[in-house]
Image 1 (tube, helix red, strand yellow):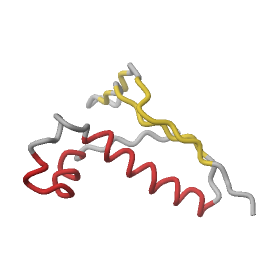
Image 2: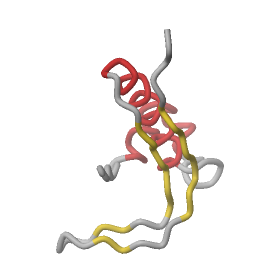
Image 3: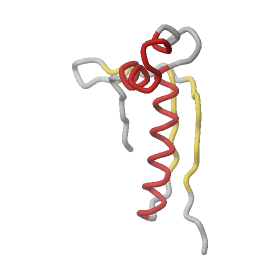
Length: 87
């Protein structure tokens, strides 16, 4: 199982939307959710190319602390099953 924490979601969104859109980060949309959605799409494409089947969950409530511990209180934002295409 892999856990990926995106640590610069606000910066990524800021680069994509520019200075005007920067004011709306956190008010109109969730930067973490937007970056995770784009990342899931890229991972889905790569996984299919490698023949990997997987389930990817975008969740809210996971917290990593500095001592390699994980605090869990999950709310699933998005779930996607990646299955191999039959040709």
